[in-house]
Length: 482
Figure 1 (cartoon, one colour):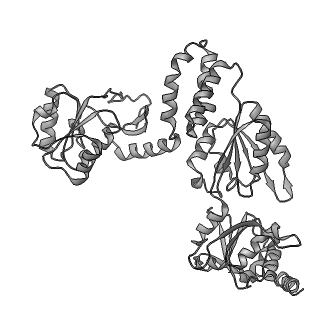
Figure 2 (figure 1 turned 45 degrees about the vertical axis):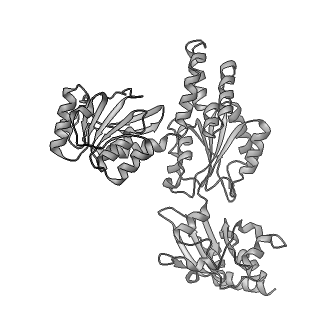
Figure 3 (figure 1 turned 180 degrees about the vertical axis):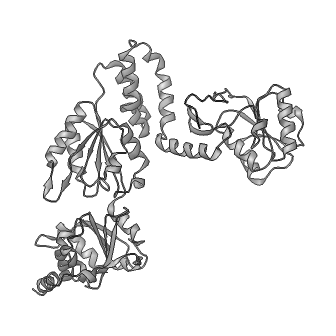
């Protein structure tokens, strides 16, 4: 059983290697792996191998590493800061380890922990920031798995932000100790300078840091309009997850699953503002005002929207309100429901020779007296993805048939796209009105119409025609005839 006070047998340190030689003995895959690892530093690589595999030779040529193309001798290690025995030959690796110790150089022998003075970690590199993960050689695969998880959590721009921070250390030390200095660094790493660096705007980041130094006001708030995707947690983007982990407040829609909301910072305030049909907890104007208020309070806010915020997410109104109020914001795309539904059906939304255009719409676009322009695209072969169309399915079908789209046009319908409890239905445009009578469909429904739909995989879907409601179908037919 593990002990609560278990002690490390290997103490982690960071060794200075700038301009120092690091010797690697070996010419194969293990030597290449160590060369790539150490090559992330500013050390001078010295690779000792009488014969080397082609991939290692390519690495040497690309990086300028020193290649000692000779049989190994102890003299090849002299002056090195550390040594890696990576020949794959046990006798040679042991000899290298013994020679290194005699020269007082720390040595690592690949896959031979008993010969090691130190262990190489799995490395998350955001130079000058580095996170090293070690298991004392007990679980290299575990270390790699942990490295992958941590790597996903950290912004790719973290290193550039740390470099900028180093340039402000002297200025920050002139701030009063305690609250003032802590507030500067907190606002630096989580505020406008960090956001500007992530956007690649380094001059703006520098100016924002200078403004923090001279301003007594707390940092202004920031609103991220984030796409939560169609519902599956693993379809959330890495940037969306990072912002959720940093948020002070999460303002989320009703269709965003609790499992995704729960991926946010544990102590973040969570405000549901969901709007479902005939059930609005807040009007759009109230949501706009709430975001502005939170921004003025200096809060970091994630406005979490189902799918993509720019696809029927009313993000335009929220962005306009934030712009008018002078509140900083950004938009983080999400996987929109149409793409998730198409993936569930293995359905090509565009298909060479069949459909070269794609229309996103809602069923309510067909409720006016005149057909929208996209209806003409549908008739000419575009694939049409209809959001929020279950309650007007009969009208959608009737108007499109009236406009000239064939009743035999293929249709795919998905409830709860991307989730484990999704349901899939297939049929034709003539079958579509049956959706309105389906009281068992409680989740969001996505409908895809077009000739490209015929290329979908219907093996795990139910036929719409089996549930066709005769009264609805008859009413639709009469509507078409009129």
